[in-house]
Length: 227
Ligand code: DC
Image (cartoon, rainbow, N blue to C red; front, side, top):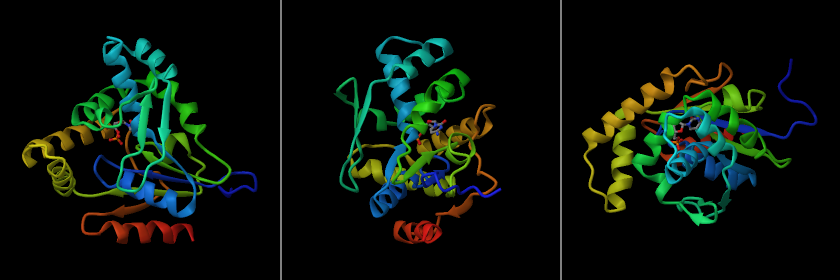
């Protein structure tokens, strides 16, 4: 059966491990095509942050599911290179959700079925008639299994640690590559090893290893799938 129906709006899913460059590519493709953007990882980061602010424990599945259901968030568009501005209950948390701590907290609550269920419809609601670029871990496998275009973007753990190191250095943060590499490997193991919606390429996804490619080259590869 064809995945494309006349009524279905186009969706491009971009899945892959942390630091593979999904976010930057998703932002560029969405801009080039005039499609909407879903940064699904932000929803997991926001759920963890909101839980902490309400003193909800990061292993209380039921309470976390309620937090996820009740999230009041806004994503405000930004220029490329700038992160999308994110508001939680009207409070600007753009920088707070991008820290290593927020990423690790998100990865810890992400295996919980109740949390994933609470966020499922919210993610699907990002789909618009014009089109959607959705990036995350299970966009092509669980959230948008019927998507017309699917990419699985990866890169070696060493390369991802180095990219992250350079990003943090530009921001003036002092971290060691070895510590970042360890965190990345731990996060990969958690995201790939969990029972619910583990990180993996959809069987019909185009796998792109970005290790030796520039952002322009990866963008060209993704755009060529769509044209
Ligand atoms: O993409 P990110 O680094 O912002 O995601 C943070 C964490 O959220 C990631 O380690 C696992 C989880 N996540 C997920 O389980 N499913 C998604 N679709 C997106 C993120």
